[in-house]
Length: 114
Length: 112
Image (cartoon, rainbow over all chains, first blue to last red; front, side, top):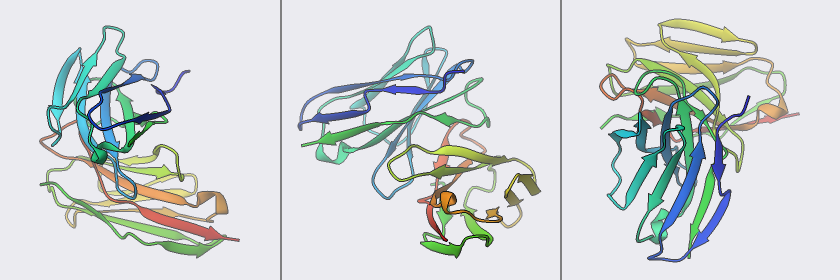
């Protein structure tokens, strides 16, 4: 039973560039949420996708955008990268859209901005 | 602004002791509460979820919820060095289903 998978595991970019991160949810899950975790902090909610639509969004600028595909996988895109975007980006999957169900995390993508 | 507060620690206990981790939350309408364990350099791993007032036990872990006091805790019995990690408290608010609000985490060290 495959868990949540994310790619790539590590990424190095420079300021101003654009990046795309990918996530496949756990088998049987249909909802994907993205979080940003800075060093020493708890994860911060970016947005959640269900039925190929963004259902909720946290306090992130519109440089952060996403997409969900018919197979439930998802992408996170960040444009015009800033030094402050350096963080661990976590994808979490769950079942049934916005709900109180537990979310299961992938191993994350560590993004470094130079 | 929904807030989740944890005692930041670090918390250090000897092997075999009980570790007690605490968390308070600001949104009285919160419905769902979770504890995640995060090893250094790794992603959060769900270890407990609790939805109703009282205690919930799973092996060496017990989660306790008191909605009136807006307080949730995690007890780890017979602590092992392998329990050394950061423990994150997470809450789903009443009006923002699906969105986890996290505390900053409590770093636990279990020494042999």
